Length: 417
Image (cartoon, rainbow, N blue to C red; front, side, top):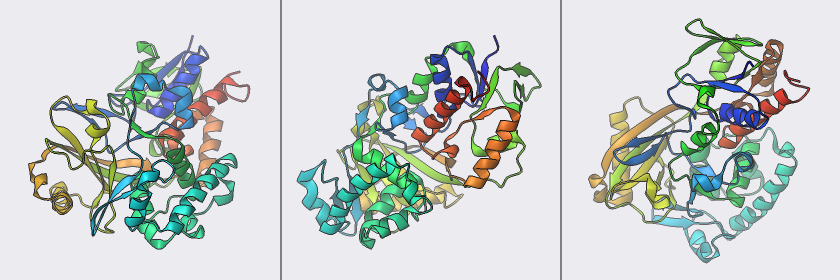
């Protein structure tokens, strides 16, 4: 029996394979890299778990709830809220419903007025309603326009929403579409921010672990896709019952033969350090509320999940949004100078472990015209598409696209009756 061939072993491809497996269909994943998971992966370096860039898992993601075993992932939670680095030192910002005891601290932070905090409570209700309406009422707005329309003060936008969501969207101007903001804000408001015990790569590994070994081929490049066959870069042909193209925008465009413009990507860099004296003992995110500097956020993953270190040292991650300089040495020096301002000379004792420069961290969602072109060409070729660029750039978006591709194949409307 010919398999359903899935080109791409990221979360979209793995989720597609999971739903096909549940339907007792034979699958074969072809992955060009030496590991699965795509952008969601972790390395083990000197006894530490280093995720590929600063990544977190939101346990409220609806797609993840139906596809993953949370108990096996052994999720540990960040404390709600954040610490803001300001001109007056660190100030705490919290969700008043989750942490009412620190409400006064939030007002004293300078990021929110009492009116802003009331608007946040109203926003929680509104974004829940918007999810039921598929965000139709706010399509076309940017995040900044959405917040300004709801009368959030400029200081709340600049001092909290901008640094916090810059780390999520990987852009510094809040130009991300408002429907994406509404969805992510809703996920934060109803769930927890987590890390799996074995790092973010535990997520794709859990999905892959449900497949037979012969269902996965790593280090396998694909040069051509057709209705019922896939041609590999070495010329070999893999016969397929159907084909799912679960690759990123650029790879998908090339395999579909589309002469589209290169899709822009959001980029990031993350620097990891080991230290005996972490900058905070809390499992909380530290944000740059200064309005300047290269650092976006700092976290201590070992405060959240002790298994991120098998040593006596703590792990610190420092994240930069965008890749502002090709000279990594100069960038690291800027970071070190900022860290000294934030935490004092003790940072000179931090031991550098590794940095990750990820130019393709998040895709920028394309417009309806390009999406229609992709869908039309794929339909003519008789193949299905999957990938977070089709829905929204997130773990949930990737998994949703994989599920939708599988469902199309398993219904009369798909390639397979």
